[in-house]
Length: 192
Length: 243
Image (cartoon, rainbow over all chains, first blue to last red; front, side, top):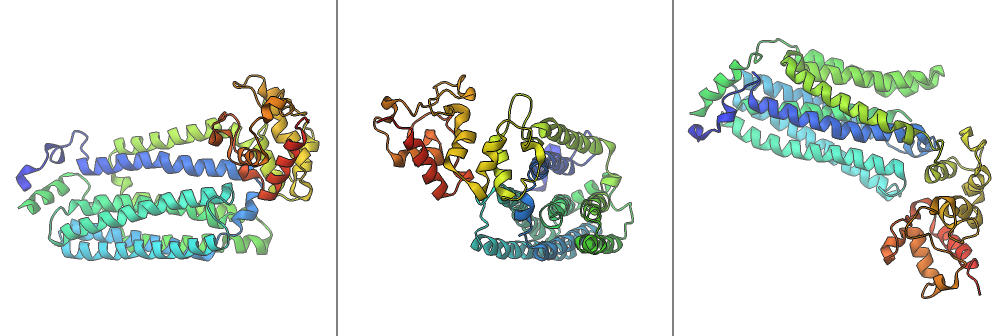
């Protein structure tokens, strides 16, 4: 297994480990994806004063709890990275487990939030505000799901002391998911 | 086995373990900033200074994002190349947003107006004073006002939305219809009504003509109107039918 590693993982022309370079590349494209979506939302929001009414129905406290959950999960993710740096795979795996728990908590809270909103008639087709709301938060939630799955895979490896550098890589991705929510929270919940 | 390999790889990268960040302190700072951003709207309400909310919402978001990116993602210690790559990405995004913003933020220009957006705003703001003043100096002001929810009228909506292409009299001679191919339907032409009934008119107004095999240039308008209003619009179109 170890001998069959692709050459690209063992050398680097940029001086940045290939895996980390790849994660940053992914995030650079994610910046355009989320940036384009949020930028379009902001432009529409400014051009449509009537959206203030629709926006007043988002549930600030639920958004706030989820913000806290993601901030905390980012903290455990960076502690996992710290543990991996010290070569402590078991500790890293445990901390990644806490991060996954945070991801699941976020998704459970979000599903209750959405169920409540949909039952009140605020569906994705209700008006353009709600279309943006579900599209932006939904795209973010897909990233949360993907992150949780990848963290699971990385945690299993880390527990066995393998591929510890990946703990940092998934961490960088996870912090980005946190950063996106840091902007979504004021856009969808605070600035009414 | 592979463990040793990874270990070396990690410490060769020039930044592993070299920096001592107090992660807990960063986390506490993030939570405190988060609490301020939640309290922002309340503070704005009490002090009567709504701009405080903007600062606590977006200013703090920027500070928080910066803390996470610098200290948790370690961009602070990353090679300069990486910062340029990400900056390029952000600049491209800003360029895109800036490029299209005049068309999205405004609802009219020298040679165009966004009727759907104007109608949505007029309906959304309710019958009160129609919020933004741009309607006032506009030619179609009367129709837009009529289309507001307080006073929806099929004739008014036809005049604002449909007449652009179909013409004020429904003869398919609206200003925006001139260049279209196929031509917009002429509701006063008996030939048009062959094989068309009221149900089909409702469907086409709501879902666009493409769904019944017609021109995709006839856009769907269902999002703008309630089912009852769609029925009224269809009645109005039916009233143009020659007998």
